[in-house]
Image (cartoon, rainbow, N blue to C red; front, side, top):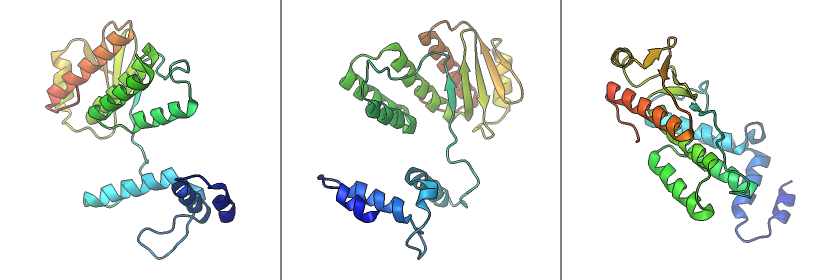
Length: 224
């Protein structure tokens, strides 16, 4: 298998891909141990790297890595509108997959701004579905900073569902509900914001306004 991989890599710059093939064949081994091979095929290269990054970040914080925790604590955002890069806008499937991955990996508003500019520069003005995709990731970044696990934005209401850990005291939510008649508790971990959001701009604007209001009440800073 290793000889076949070497034979297939004849182009300039193939060294990195050859190393990845070799890693997949023989396994990764131990980072801090003596074993020189492991079960890479059972895990996969990307998942292995993600596991290492999570463990390193935990150790830097002085914590014991939690190997039972999920690899990603993602936030689900559903605007109930198409959110994608249309094929007639970005025709290459590999390019679309690469951009989807880069958008998902962006953790700051600044990183999304940079990607936004790059996409417009390469493919032109964003169609509505692509704009919805960018807006979805902007709301993801805002919501994640507030401990939101799910954003569900309909035409008549917006629901924010919180994860197990929120970066503020529960009284902030109670205060928010008491001072705003259009915001109500919908169970132990959900807020429902009523109001008309007939199109993408209104839906995104109302969701962003609700997140900003929650951030002000909790005295936290989030990306605009």
